[in-house]
Amino acid sequence: MFDLGWTEMLVVGIVALIVVGPKDLPVLFRKVGQFVGKAKGMAREFTSAMNDAADQSGMREISSGLNKSLKAATNPVGGAMDGVKDAAKSLTDLDPASETGKLATERAQDVKRIQAGTARAAAERKAKEAKEALERADAMEASLDETPAPQDAPAKKAET
Image (cartoon, rainbow, N blue to C red; front, side, top):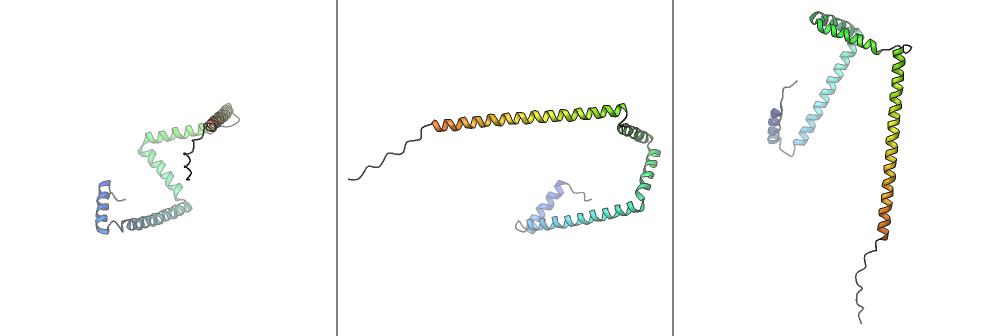
């Protein structure tokens, strides 16, 4: 929208600091941020309203068909690649009763088993590490209990 680079924004920031002053600069930036947020919200609302209107009138189907035919006419290699993509997509939509579908189902089950085994091994390892940490903490507490307490300061002489 606006072609502002970092240097231009830095210059605008320095000018704003000089003109507005450091005391009121955060208030100014907050107001500008709120204004930009409201403007983006209005633009988003307008865009969604226009998209809804296009969906209701059926313009999307017409424009997508027109775009595909224009793309195929202007770029035959791209059109051929679209055909390849469509064919590859049809290969991923497998019939569950076919051998390929059965193999895909078996492979998905194997993946789930591997993930479950990995999760179990990780949980067991964490439990083992937690047990060892508790044992070390107990040993440290026991060693602290065995250490003699520091002696109190010498008692004051009784006055006679």
